[in-house]
Amino acid sequence: MSSPAAPWSQVFQATDSVTGCSFPAPSDLPLLVAAEHAGLRPVSSCRNGTCRSCISHLTRGEVYYSVAWPGLSPDEKAAGFILPCVACAASDVTLRFGAWDAFD
Ligand code: FES
Image (cartoon, rainbow, N blue to C red; front, side):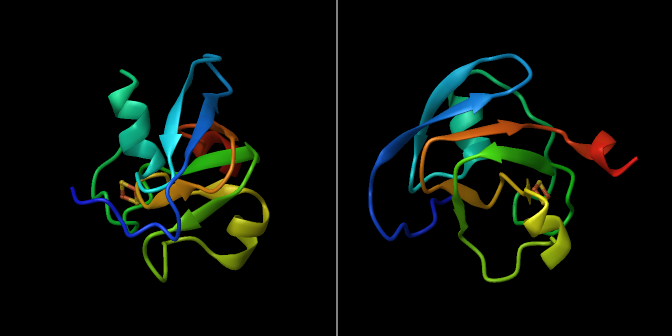
């Protein structure tokens, strides 16, 4: 997978809120790939922001998207849901991978 064009290059820290595992999150690398580089294995499928299998919940920080229309509604974005296969860190972040249970 090629990396999206980042508006800047910086390495932030990402933390998985379930395991407490922290890993480097370069601004030019999707959070999903950064997590995989750290040995985590979040659920994913399409890796292009359409299938939603990687949906996660951002509880701290900011992300930006490498695609214009990631498969999230405005309400889902406002509630903190992200698609880490196409979301890159724009600050230090804390997230919970695999947040499907949040829709129950
Ligand atoms: S893996 Fe399909 S939307 Fe992220």
